[in-house]
Image (cartoon, rainbow, N blue to C red; front, side, top):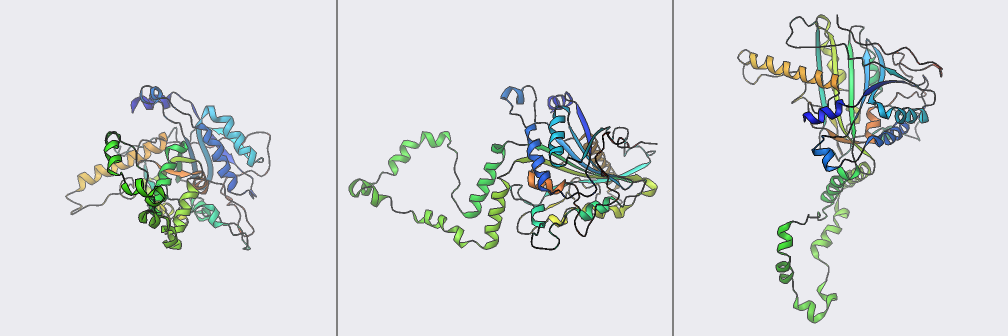
Length: 405
């Protein structure tokens, strides 16, 4: 693990702030295409590089933050990917402004063990309710060409919620994406499809199977085949026939589930980790802002497929007592501080090892979770979301940095 951290630290990382025009009419499909281009960060590793030199795939951190109600879109990226990221965004958003900025978390420190720390935090990671080869609801299901309002932004309420932050509050969404090769995850999806339709899964050849091959071959010797010929011997296997008709016996919902999985594994995938973090002074900490967290991705839930939900069990920065709060107080205090320390450290360092195991989302799902608000006939981009009025020759003022008093 340490050698991997050393490898990651050997690379330089930069932060881009991205602003799109006020009247953004570009489809979220453009963002999906951008993530397909950014997938070029993936590099094949040799055995020595992976297990001796500690090389791992680098990653991006996609962040939507609200500082006092001012919403900004940030991307942390390896510096060597600068031109790839710039060209990808400018290709689809030619009027955008991409500015290199400082890390807004750089000067902020938080220690739950320090009684003099003036801040309080709340945060959590997110997880999928089911197997990660099963997709969540995506932006394409919110597009209705025949309706008067052809596009509905599933995150519109979430963006507006971030814009309600008070001047003393910070709220951040962090989506870390680490590119995966197709062969690293698509076979799992194919196996899941076969499982759902009742097809016989392929078995890996083991040494025992190879050793016993002559015995198994002899045991399957058929006098019927020898005398009557192969046509009689190879009569349809009743079990195979049953497997072939499973699709016809499946309900429409079961078929739809299979179709969704096949669509997911047809696109490039990323290992993903999602964190939310809320920070405010202790005397102004607003517990009601937790509702922004819990309701963020509810529009993306589909009972027929998958949903993304807060990880209440492990990373949610709250603890419950089992029998007696008084008797368990020392442990509860320690456990709560441990959770807060981890969620803050993981967020600030954009660390993929702290917290839950990463899950897989494809580029369509990621574009659903990280895209720019779309202006439609009846909705407009919140005035609190940073955007361009028109194309400018000079970059905008750098993003402000959280400063600790």
